[in-house]
Length: 408
Image (cartoon, rainbow, N blue to C red; front, side):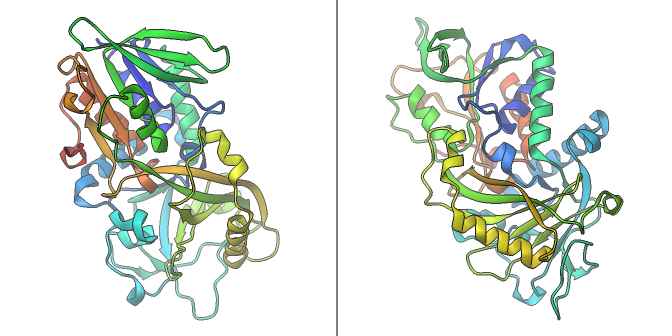
């Protein structure tokens, strides 16, 4: 089986390596991550909300497949204990009459709430223990039983990576890909990896390369294929977040399940508040498409906006109450987004790689992209990893992702 190098050891890259290792020697798989700290962006700082059917037709099969993969993996590997996998209920505090019918594809462009993609009509619900309701507020349930779930993305990412390493997958960290080499037929034959701590360089013979570098995917493509006129259509969307605790959300409440609360009535700001197993509550929804992408994910720590954090703190106090709310973690991460609003799961046509650069026919070789998931990276992670592994290995795909291919 051809050696595969995956650029980016976030949840998409590790999921791809995990599923690849089921059908080829794990020692033929390499994960490359430049950030000094693993999972320092969206894979570690996302909300961890999972949905089965909140997706547009282009990614509907992938979303449903991934939701089931999350369920199966949690049942098989003890996900409830290891990464806080739990059933959830989605609720909204905005009146049904005020919710528009826009698709979630528009989320990255107009700041819309993900609640607008809910596939069911709202019904009257019961407020979770931690929610402070105002006078006249009515809780609306916007999910069906068994169609949404919750987890801790950092814990899941760490679990997947450890499974890969235990199986024999190679992790190069911190390291970055700096160039590719071709053989006498001008076909991709190896990739040069630079260890950023020791300044040593290593050539890894390979014929398959997967770009799964999240918001940095476009930069990675340009570095490896500098003579190409093609620009990978992936940009970044910055998002601040908080993790807090509240005396109103305790372990004895977890038996009733978690909740994902969407506040949809605020122009330009759509707060998301999610209770997690273990007593934590995640607060986010304040996003910016103008925040410059840092060189490394760990550089985000120095860019946290105090005004943005204070806005989230105010939301937490408003929703959870003033008493006893403590901030556990502040965060800023950069999610990979596309203008079309759906991810890219695709082999890159050889003609886009630049003059005199080719690859072997699939499954012997190829350059692939798996990025651009926007707010759905965690939810779609396992399905993406499974489908990309099948695509790379030339097997039948478990979901129709033809609408997610690169358009040329």
